[in-house]
Amino acid sequence: MNILNILEEIEKTDAEVYERISPRRKAMAQFYGFGKKVALASIPLALGTMFKKAYAQTASTEVEAVLQFALTLEYLEAEFYTKGVAATGLVPAGAALGAITTIRDHENQHVAFLKTALMSLGKTPVSKPTFDFSAGNGSNTGPFANVFSNYDTFLAVAQTFEDTGVRAYKGQAPALIGSGGVLTAALNIHSVEARHAAHIRQMRKARGANVKPWITGQDTGIGAIVQASYAGEELESQAGIKITGINGQMISVAAATEAFDEPLTKAQILAIVDPFIV
Amino acid sequence: MENLRQKDEQIILQEQDILSAPLQRRSFLRYAGAGAAGIALLAAGCKKDGMMIDDSAGVNLGSGDVGILNYAYALEQLEAAFYIKVASSFYSGITEAERSLLSDIRDHEIAHREFFKNALGSNAIPGLEVDFSMINFSSRDSVLATAKAFEDLGVSAYNGAGVLIKDANYLTLAGKIVSVEARHAALIRDLISNGTFANAEVIDNNGLDKSRLPMEVLGIAAPFIKTKINANDLPKS
Image (tube, rainbow over all chains, first blue to last red):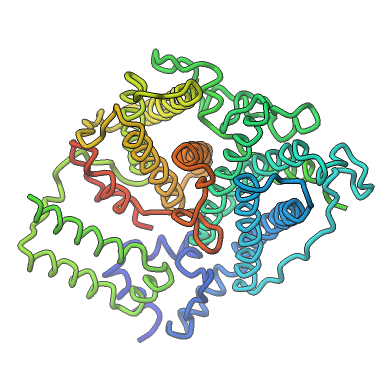
């Protein structure tokens, strides 16, 4: 049976086969060996080779870039919480330490997961950078110099990392269209970061910070030092539709901005985390 | 009736299995020519049980990205209706903080609902009729347990729908909403039991949240929606 016959056979059961084959990125979805490698050997060799040739390079380069970027951010968070949990007397025992430990574990799991994902795509995961959690670019005397000795500073940095992480994943999602399981996994991490953010914000509120689990306007609840992580969150319109007072509903400006979280580009995120990376 | 519901659930489960099987396996089956056989088996299973499902009945969500937006619109209608009812007469013993947070969530869900309505324009499905008869709105436990179920379901629905969306702008919009739903979910969970914002019930050993495909989500939401929803034309992959 030659390749054309095979495609004809496929078409009988899958009318969209040509569409699947044609747009490269979409086809990648069907053939991504994510987590579990595709059993390419099981597919007739000619077919496997054809798809490899047609789709392998372009899509995987873009997907790899997203995964490496995400891994870098997860390294940052994982080490931050690992050090926070280890710092004697920093996080109060009980509910607070329990929550921070839960978050630490998730961030470490994300690191491991992304490394595995990259390796399953035949890529080498980037190495963990050296971090300076004072945001001092290696001086360790940056604005958050007391981050592992002052609990409120620690929570403020945690909130910024989580809210920024949510925006980072959101910004990368479009680059993963057509990547199938990779996109779903990224979304499944994205919502976990949002859950973390909500909890950290409640922890801060309990200590007197003026924050809610969601982001109001572009309020940081921390100060100008982290403003870049919240800039743009004050959007009142989505896709050209004004949300404030929409259709005569009593939706305040605050609620309109809270109801939608905003993405940031990779460049914006890298600028935000730059002071934390030596 | 009970029997019928069980059969419905069985079929949903069967479909779920097929739909949620890893993509590569599904593709392999397809390309190996076994896909048709699998589908035929499922159809035979329906016939054997005497279940002739009328696929054309109900409000049709539509196809492509419009179908996914209508799917989200349906879920937001459900959530908004729930919180409007909650806030119209809060459960007894509610604290000021809880009242404020639940009012915020109500406003967010109304904003989401109205946004989809306007974004869809003439493609929008009509308003759905909800059924909250099993919820005791005067009970904190009942209200928060329902809120938790809806929020976790919403998060998994958006997470699972992402891969079905073709347009990058719509994907970003879904992303803008899902993280807010996740914030709601975390808060509601913490109100029920502090520290459960992201526990093992929802987060797996890889640190990943859940994602669900539309058929599964609509099956779970079905008891709360009187209007019959037809999701047959939604994208499958």
